[in-house]
Length: 59
Image (cartoon, rainbow, N blue to C red; front, side, top):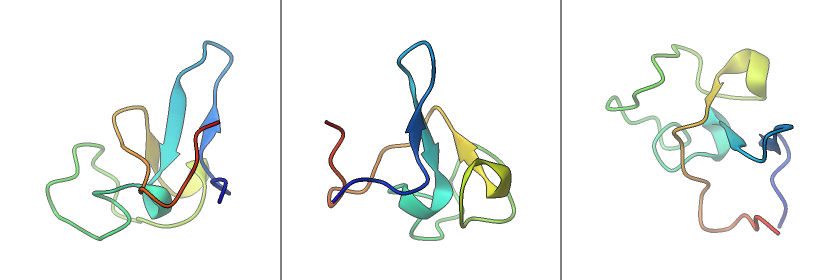
């Protein structure tokens, strides 16, 4: 399955949406991005430090 909201930027870095992140997607409080809304695309919370959930492909 491909990520719906997470995208690779022009420099090749993955911008991981909170809804598709290991930490943000599970609603954990130790997320380092500091977003209060943890769903949807980049405008609803995303960062470059996140890790995609295992069900998403990166290729």
